[in-house]
Length: 316
Image (cartoon, rainbow, N blue to C red):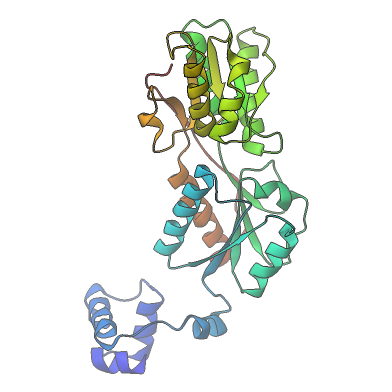
């Protein structure tokens, strides 16, 4: 840092302010210091800064799996949001014999300043006591005073999908639901039930998959007589489309299908899938934004909810 200061003709304190992104540096001086850093190959020593500030500028991410498209998209969004704020990301999984307490312990040993707990792993977080001082933001969870929650309006999105099918003239809407242990799945099922109840329609018995397209295909026979199906995610909807095609049923002429998530490939399904868009980028960015604010101000944050929107294509 002293070398950079001498090269740029400024004080070491000015270099420190630039490194720490302080607003108390005029643009011309900042540019001169950054040019000196580039010329000298200066790199911040994170360990040294952590000793001085008590913060590592590292956040953790706890996941149960990265095999699902939704989780992998959330990982991408969280990684990008962390990088923009100059935070590193440490990832731990809770699978097999490893439990959430072990994951929290590993993150604490790595010195993270806080962590995001993602989707299915939140069920495990609710059953464990987080380590003292570990700031947590949980994606998709019922209210819990121990951490801050960021989530999509799953129920609202499901209501949009159900209303769209009812408005198209269908007498009822069947549901291919997600796993019973999933908060997102239960919220989407709740929204579907509420919209049917508001229309004076008794909800048919839902059938349940495991988020995979294979489970959507295997449950397809259950919807042989249905005229409209709301599917809890796009991957299961893909499997259902194949099952209906194998059974000789046309979409949307014989059966209307609406999914949830709006995956990148949803527009390329045959037919292109009508679905509820979950904004993974906004969800990941908001989770990191809230966590960083908690880390840097040491203040609690309120729950955050991000709306979902209906994207109408050819399947319904």
